[in-house]
Image (cartoon, rainbow, N blue to C red; front, side, top):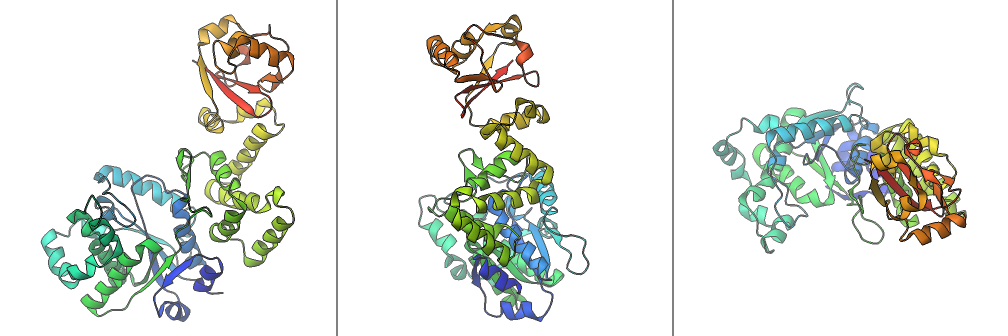
Length: 427
């Protein structure tokens, strides 16, 4: 199965320029995808493009990852209703370093002729002055051509209009393709379907400036089955950086996908072959409640992004919250991981000084914190055996708790019933 066939059966191919597949069948081709450096981490929305480069390299081709140090200073108008903030050179460099470290987890940068290569378009734009650029590049692309692009038309017809900075973006990206074609033999640019117009501007510049030939391929923009945006949770973006999105939260994001989405995502975001995926789909169809697809999807992606030990920790975290794992598990986590585990769980701060003296449990849960609305409610549930501290049933409404009950010398975990958790933080 060649590269294009791989993308087709996985349901990710969107548009392909005539002649592209024939070019790829002739031998090794260099191709690239650009990544946006507006943050120091990629998020799961970038994974579709990363997977495209992985399949490209596995098919024997040479992938280039272009990180837009220059274009990040301009801002791509595609799919956006407003101009984004421009970043300083220092912040961009910090972001580029973070993205490079992440891409090195997925692509092989040391495997011979088709080793992956990372490039930064700031390297060829930093010495290019404005007059030279408009004379040597701008003259080849007409304003009529640029204004015909949907990304431009949509902004011009909107309320905010479009600055010249963003209008020039497609020329800048087009020159990226020209530069990589001329100096790195890159014959193919790939990207999301919203990038088609910018990519084709590059092929047109190559044709008009040097009478050369280059090709384009785009992939589907990923959406949830309900039409909502992929890659976000209630807390915002799902990042590939563990300090922004914990491995547990990352794992839960994939585990909680719907059955319909899991069928789509397992083809796009894993490296499982067709036979394995179809086997998993058949197993899932027999017993959907076992969530076979979601578990396989979440495991594969979590291990490839964060490693097996972090995946194991994510499983233990799930078992802690939803199973019978004891409280001692929390000692394996650092403070940031504890807080991530209880992200979204109501939390309360109490005085460490007061706790040192010892606090009656009803006061602790209903006065010092808001676990219960009243001491009476707290006492009733404690007497009924429905309240716990640190996964142990509270013996009586008169029980006293002090700093000896702190986990990692800072936390107390309260429960109402089995599933309602509360995090108490001594400060």
